[in-house]
Length: 423
Ligand SMILES: Cc1cc2nc3c(=O)[nH]c(=O)nc-3n(C[C@H](O)[C@H](O)[C@H](O)COP(=O)(O)OP(=O)(O)OC[C@H]3O[C@@H](n4cnc5c(N)ncnc54)[C@H](O)[C@@H]3O)c2cc1C
Image (cartoon, rainbow, N blue to C red; front, side, top):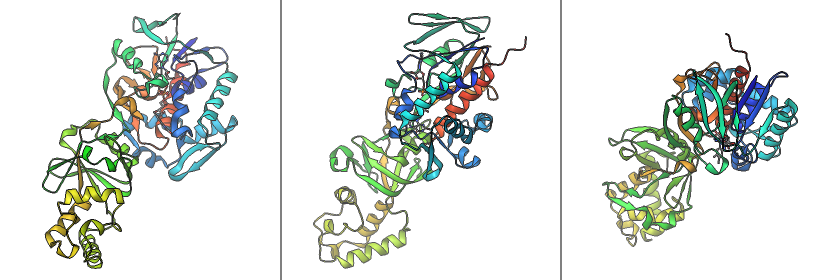
C-alpha cells in the first residue's frame, strides 16, 4: 500500500510516523526544502510542544469543534506525545500552566527528533514537491499532481496546515484541493492575532484618534481586565492579564485570546473595554482617587497620576478625561473625579478589524468537521482521503494546544490510513 502524506508539518509528520508499517510505503510530499518550518518558529523558537492540563481544562482551551476532537485527543493525549519524544532522546520540561517545552528550549531539537524517528521508520520524504491538484475517479484520488511529478496513491492524508505565516509553507492550497473535490470550507478567519483599532472613546462616546497618541506604541499593560462588549454594553467575553499597544491597535496575550473568540462575529458591533484597575471596585477606586487628590491637592492634575498609571498612559487618560492638565488638583470637581474613575475602569476602543490572517498564530475555519469521521479522520466524501491538523475547522488558544491537535489528528489519520479497506 502506498500512503501519501501531503505536508511535512506537525500533523503530516505524526501521520507518517503512525502510518508506517514494514510492508507499506509512506511518502511525505513537502513543498519546502525541509520539514517542520512552522514548528521551528513555534513558542518564539522554543516550541511549546503540548500541555498537560487536566482533561477538562484541556477542552476549555479549544475554541472550535472541541467535541469533534475528543476521540482523537483521548486516543493520543499529551502524555503519549511527550513519551514519543522522550523515548527518542528529547528531554522535555513543564512550565507555568502545564506548558511543555524541550529541555533545551530549542524548537530545532524537536524537528531533529522527528527526523530521526521518520528515518528509523523508513518514511520517504520528497522535498520541493508542491501539490497542485488531484485527479479523482469514482470518489477516489487516483493521482496526485505536483509541479514536476505525478504520484499514484492508495491512500492520501492531507495535512497542508492553515493559511498563516505563508513563508513556512502553509499558504492555504490544501483548502482549495479539498474544496475542488466537494468538501465544504468553513470561512477562514485569523485567530490568535492582534486586534486593530483606530479610535478610543470617552465617556460620552466621542472618538479620540489613536494615531494622535504615538507615545502609546509599545506600552505594555499588566494585570488588566479586558472585556469585549456589545452595542448595549453587555460583556460578551472577559480576560485578565497582559496587553500591549501596537502601531495600529492592541496585542499581547489577552488580546490574542479574545481575537479567537470574536473572529466570527460582526466586529463593528463590538468594543474592547479595558479595566485598568480590576482589583478595585468603583467605590474603592473612588476612595483611592480622593486619597491621592488630598495628598497632591496643590499640584497640577497632570502630575498627580504617577502612582496610579504607567507614565506613557497619563497624557492619554488626561485627554480622554477632559480635565485640563493644568488644573490644580483641589479644584477638580467631584463629577470630574467620578468620570476619571469610570474611565480607568472602562477604557473603550472601537474595533476596526483583526490583523491580517498571515500574521495569525492559527487559522480558524477550514474543512467542515461534519464531513470527516472523528474516529479515523477519514473524509466522508472521498474514499481514500484523510485529514490532519490545522486544515480542519479546529483551533485552540495558546499553550501548546494547537500543536497537540495537529499531533493527535495526525496520529489518528496515520493509524487508520494504513488499515486495509474492507471490500
Ligand atoms: C508564530 C507561531 C507560533 C506558534 N507557536 C505555537 C506553540 O508554541 N505551540 C502550539 O501548540 N502551537 C503553536 N503555533 C501553531 C502551530 O504551529 C500550528 O497549529 C501547527 O503547526 C499546525 O500543524 P499542521 O501540520 O497542521 O500545519 P503546518 O505546521 O503549517 O504544516 C503544513 C505543511 O504542509 C506543507 N504544504 C502546504 N501546502 C502544500 C502543498 N500544496 N504541497 C506540499 N506541501 C504543502 C507546508 O509547507 C508545511 O510544511 C504557532 C504558530 C505560529 C504561526
